Amino acid sequence: AQSVTQLDSHVSVSEGTPVLLRCNYSSSYSPSLFWYVQHPNKGLQLLLKYTSAATLVKGINGFEAEFKKSETSFHLTKPSAHMSDAAEYFCVVSVNTGGFKTIFGAGTRLFVKA
Amino acid sequence: DAGITQSPRHKVTETGTPVTLRCHQTENHRYMYWYRQDPGHGLRLIHYSYGVKDTDKGEVSDGYSVSRSKTEDFLLTLESATSSQTSVYFCATSVVRISGDTQYFGPGTRLTVL
Image 1 (cartoon, rainbow over the protein chains, first blue to last red):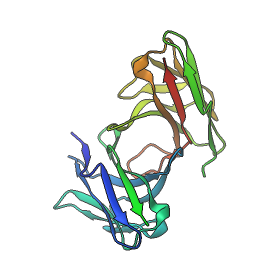
Image 2 (cartoon, chains in turn yellow, purple; image 1 turned 90 degrees about the vertical axis):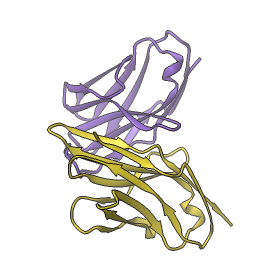
Image 3 (cartoon, rainbow over the protein chains, first blue to last red; image 1 turned 60 degrees about the vertical axis):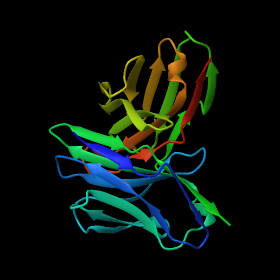
Image 4 (cartoon, rainbow over the protein chains, first blue to last red; image 1 turned 180 degrees about the vertical axis):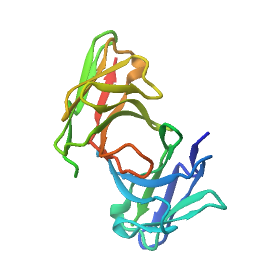
C-alpha cells in the first residue's frame, strides 16, 4: 500500500531563517514525489517534483527537496524564509501500480513571523 | 496558470437540494479530476475523466456523479446534498495520467450544505 505522512501539521519560523517541512512516504513501487503549495483561497501550485532522476530537486521560489530512498523521506527546505512563503504545503506521492494512484498528505501550514 | 476556472466559487445550499459545480479548462488536457479538501485529510479524489464521456470513480465517489460532454468542461453533481459534503472542491487537469505527471489545479469552490 502507498501512503504519505507529513510529520508536522504546523511549522512556524521567523523571516530569514531556514524552513524544513518533513514528508515521509511508503510505497511498494518506485514513486514520483511532489510538493505543492496552496496560498489562502487559491488552488494548489507545483513547487517541485522528483521522478527518478536527480535526488536533489530544485523548485520555484528557492525551495528544494531531497529524495532519500533509505529513509523514505522527501523533506522540503528553503535557506531563508520570506513572508510570502506563508501558505499550506502538500507532499504528494504517485505510483503506477498496474493502475495509477496519487495520494496527498494532510498538509503542513507554514507561518512566517516578521 | 493552466487556465482552469471553477464556478461558482462559493455556494451555500440546503440539505437535499441538487448542486452542480463546473470546471472549465483552456489547455486541452485529456485528464480532469475532482477532489475534495477537508482539514486533516489533504485532497481526496472523487472522480476523474480520461476523455469525453469517459469517467471513473475515485476513492470518495459515493453521493457524487460527473459528466464530461466536451474536452474543456467537467461537471460535478451532488444529487442530494448532505452536510457531510460541506467542503472545498478542487478541479485539476493533467496531460497524461502516469506517475510523474503534474496536475494543474483550479482555484476551488467552497460549498456549504446547511
